[in-house]
Image: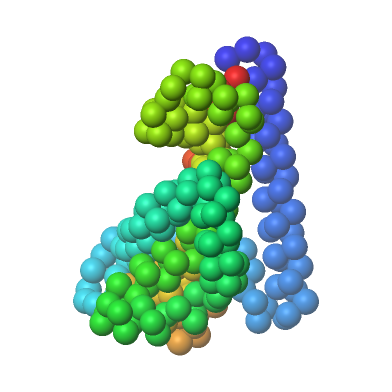
Length: 262
């Protein structure tokens, strides 16, 4: 690691620490202003340590450790996100490469994209006859749009020079897709995936509140019923931290592909 990279890493770490201190300060201020109705950082930390003392215990369907809750949510998120990506990427390639495809599919996308995940849940229950399937369905249907739109944009923005190279060398459709279309548009696809995983992680909380059972969203709802605001705040911090890590992971992937294309 050269001196510039080291200085940059130290600077980023210091900014992150400063950001966390600002957050804790604002949090403590809210606690003071609400006369401790909103638990402060110290009380929440104590509950966090209690939960982390045995994160993977399992004492029945509605009594599982915070680690089990988080793992269940991540499995659902990646299942729905993966299914959505399988649908979104081919459709995005079609829309970006074909004016007819864009004109036919874009109105459908614009109608369905703004629909709330809560509105999709009853249809998921009807289709899958189970809350588990319905939760994965609403994650899939609400998270696929950023990937689809970014994929379509990436393909549509391929320069004419690139297309002419394919024509000049007589590329087949498959060779054009693998040698020109995908390599050029993959940074846009990864940007869409990065946005989609964020949407999926937000939707999981609402989905699990409706479906019940096990998961970080159910943990929030169960903590509310138990009137434990500290547990709710712990869950919020865990949700935020996992969301940050997921975003950083996809950002690193995006930077890697962008660097390779230079």
